[in-house]
Length: 308
Image (cartoon, rainbow, N blue to C red; front, top):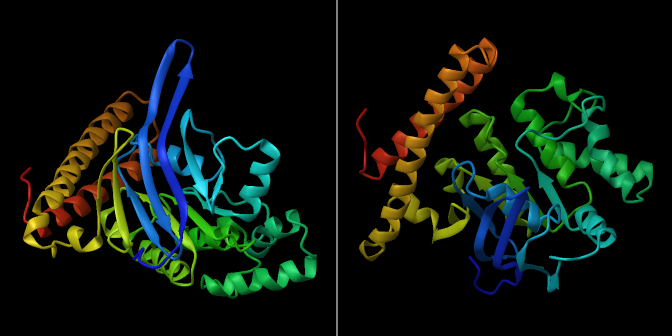
């Protein structure tokens, strides 16, 4: 996929350490990767692996402790805040897991707002806003508030908001984490389409079905890149000499399965202790059970089914 394309995002030896009093937590441990123009890649890893931290640094929301992030030849790692604000407004479109929409604004108003902030004329912003609403398949819902839309519709609206100022780079942090498989596929169709139109798209996910739709898959565990794969490897169609890479994916999925089981145990304990509501328990339990079903399905397809 990278042949003949220019590198847009170049991450080199990235380190991020968070300090809370005397306690230091190393979220990233020397991460390096390159993403090319028109490429969509997945950063795949469990909760706490460093995915969000990595995207926040690439997006200019956070700064690294060491290492560099070079975007279109410019090192953004330690730019002053004024320059970072401009970078975030024009260069990067950020899509969050929990939509990050303004609840009191309509769908169209949410899309128009970033353009007004960038100095675009209101009439031009509205016209482009309608085009973006159409692009993500929400025509006819321009006047709806976010709470009047389904989860899948809100996430597609979030994509339209991220595209408002036509940024060359799209960052998506677990964009399908709260969606069922049907809506997740619709969201990913839009993301892949953006890459095919020349955008550089980086998606963080723990879902192998989402990762399989991208051009490259980076496995991130405990703040380190532990492997780079292609969807063919994840789909089990790789040549025999690549069996070791496939094993690393199987190992990752098994770890994720164990983690989901542990999360269910912790969730059940919190519910029994009265620390979470019935509604919260049911919602989170259902998502975890769905995650377990997906992982078991992937492991079975890779010939590595597990018992229990």
